[in-house]
Amino acid sequence: MNPILEIDNLRVNYGQVEAVRGISLKLMPGEIVSVIGPNGAGKTSMLAAAVGLLPSRGTVKLDGESLAGIDVEERVERGLCLVPEQRELFGDMSVLDNLLLGSYSKRDSKQVRNRKLDSVYHRFPRLAERRSQRSNTLSGGERQMLALGRALMSEPRVLMLDEPSLGLAPLIVSEILGIVRSLREDGLSIILVEQNALAALQSSDRGLVLELGQVSLAGASQELTRDSRVHATYLGGSTDD
Image (cartoon, rainbow, N blue to C red; front, side, top):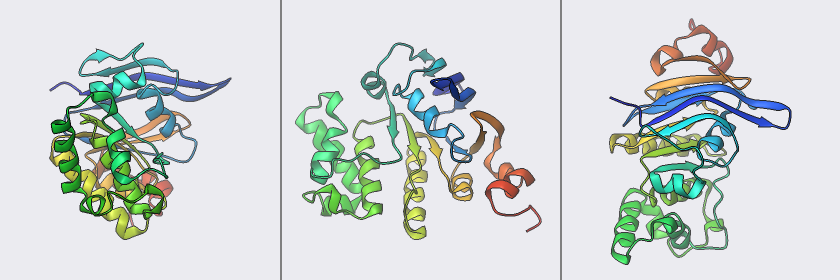
């Protein structure tokens, strides 16, 4: 089986500072890969470069085809979608209008658009209940659901999530990550960047640890949860705890 997304020797500079220093990653169909690491490790820059929001060097391939020279809109059209850390919703617009923006590049017929909306509302019943509300009146968990729902309106094949648990209460985090796992069960391939290292590793098949813009550890998620270095730095103790 070939990777659905392949990142090879990705490099990103901010002026003279190299924030991403040769990261490589393969994402297989129907897989969740979690990416953990300290602030400033290059996690967000990696995602932004992959979707075309930042200039970069190296190779990004979707289904074996290079995305070099392809802009963000076309990458989304091909099935690569990013849910950013700050969610970037339009606060004065309704839940419905925010969702519709997720399929703007598809030029959907009304029938197709309504099918997508029904699918999102089925997965997120609270969005259906609040479809006429402005998004800035939603709770933090509901805003994250809206950001996910908007991404799903583009019918992605690869979904990249940047800190989906940011600012959420533990029960809501569990709910959101449960939704992420259900998306994988439906066949979506996911890169999960997450500060909550334990929750990320428990929700993924494989994991990467980024430090100073490079991959310092990689492996099956269960193995990483038992790694003494991961425990000491990210899980709050040793493997003996």
